[in-house]
Length: 360
Image (cartoon, rainbow, N blue to C red; front, top):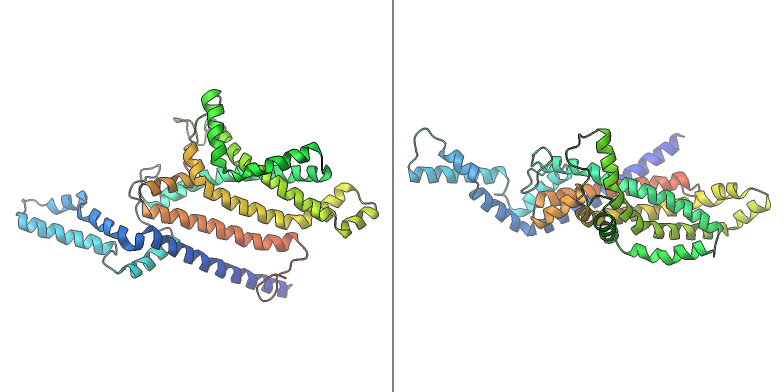
């Protein structure tokens, strides 16, 4: 038992370090690209030079300052502001400082965006926008996983049926992103039928945490969740069905049938469990793809999540918010891959963690 714990701990450490280094490299490249090699820092210096607050502080004296002394005082305050921001250092040094701040989401103030409470702190803005995105993705992907797994089992029992052929025919529709279907859903249910809201997370004026607010959130989620489900569920069903058909033809399945085991028991013990690792891998990769598509989908539905924040930051060249969103996506991706490694070992008895930190 102690040896297993040591193996698992060493493997977890190796995987965490490798994923951490990958995340650090990705964030650093994002900082360099988003900052245009330091060009945007020059823009920030110009903003400091013309910041009205500094000019007002320079004039806060009991007696009016002579013009020359006022300009010297203003220039001194501007230089100190530039030093406080670290903009006097060379870009390679600044980029390392930005990397440390980005990984801790200590990215200062956003240029254009505000939080629900009026704060411009990037960390507060992103932490307020993260739960709506997780709520939307979590609900949609839970539906896709359950429906996809159930329908795949049904189709594996009815191979070649009309329903099976219909799902195969609909599988290519998943090539289009969820926001593409979201536009049509808005046109049909919001514009033409007028039975569902156009967008946003809830109707305005409702008290947060109340039953009315929860029902309003659920109603506003129907269309965006439906768009994500339509854009992913058919490919999920098709891929899971394919795995089930492959594993159902294995020799040990035929042996189980010869022993007289029920179809339900054969599916649960000899088909479902060995197929779960590749199915979950495909599902996690699909979630990662959906994360990227949330940038446009949340903008289509005006959903106040991370995706909409990223789109707004891009249009306004708000570098701190752009870097912060990339860091959050990086953390989500790293955690997903990290948990996926252990899911393999837990679900598939053929996979064991080796002492060297790998799998065998």
